[in-house]
Image 1 (tube, rainbow, N blue to C red):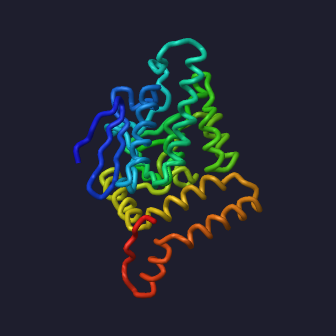
Image 2: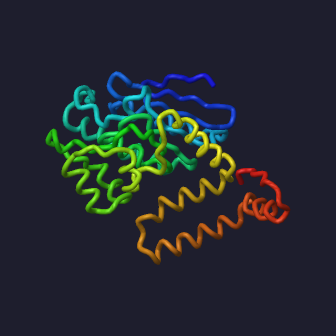
Image 3: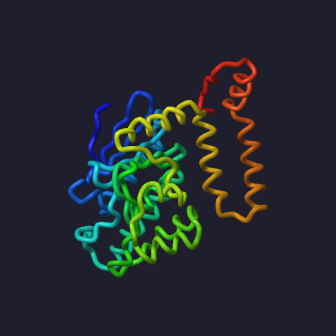
Length: 264
């Protein structure tokens, strides 16, 4: 599994079909420069179009930070106001790329996640966090507001909790992040890789076709009114039952054996 460098993102694919994407700006605490956002989108597109990729793991280089948010000191590439607007729109496309990947994404929080870094891991499907890492939205302290992260945050935690995180700009520890519903699992740093591997191994045992269909349904119906969501999910259920993997899964259950997924 030889990693390859794409600008500020390392891409490594193992024999099982697990693509590990590493935000690779440790000197800047893996801050979100326009170049890094573009490189991450390119890496996600590479994973999306590669049929051998089953699961994506997203992490940061080093142990201090998963992602420190926007690069305030050196993030702009120049080009004036309109170019700046376009660069900020890159984050919107990044969230869509994570949601529309068709494959599960596991965030490995190896260090602090701040500002836009919170938005990045919230856009992932599952999050495993080292217990000595912290989460925070400190933008208000420098006269900014985590505008686009707001949309993701209020969909994961209650309004009061979201408001407190953004209004006070305080950092919370890993266990509080889990209590709030920001992350799925918290483990000691020395157990982080083993826990990520447990999650990945479980995902690899599922049907890729069902994971793709289910992930699409999850994101596309999350904000629909109840009845509209139910009708949409009814259609997805019909599609699900017609999958080869659905027939295989039922047969394997009856025959008391492990299913042999085809991904169709």
